[in-house]
Image 1 (tube, helix red, strand yellow):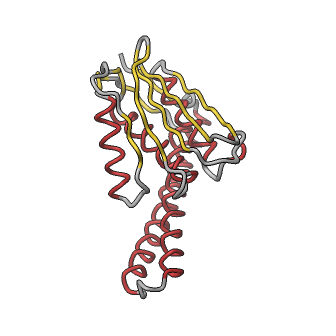
Image 2 (spheres, one colour):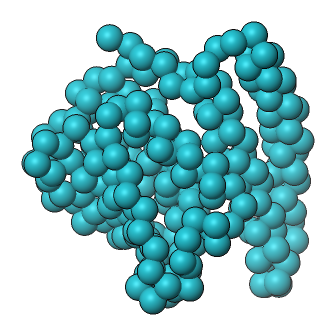
Length: 214
């Protein structure tokens, strides 16, 4: 049976969601123009000028970050139907990581257990969940401290663990812009599938998120 995640659909909330969708649409058009300009400049400006190329790459990253924030906000504000299917979560992860790598992300180290049981997960929301967490950890990872994504069997489901050994973070409040919305959005999707999310911070050893799906 389908369910719905999001805020209750009262007239006031519905109007707010409509306004948020309209604002997001307008902002995405502007962000799309900025992205096109930055991409064009990256092609025509001297590639040997590392500083210029670095700033253009940073601009493209900020565009992606803004779209990510908008998507997280919309998902929290607007009710979303949930239609779970039996899914091979490792296949979903591999596809999401490949898509992020093609977009220019730093390499993600995969440690997939293999031969895991399928889980009941809405495919669209599952892709949104994995993509969301990959973007979040992209903001945190460095050349020296990359992202590790591993899977393992749980007693009644599957664990998905994503982590980075970057140091200095002690709480969610210390993360960058959009991170709080991202984590709320992830929790909303996971809760709608009767799963759980464990968030662990250690200033010395790094950050780890553990998602359990059944």
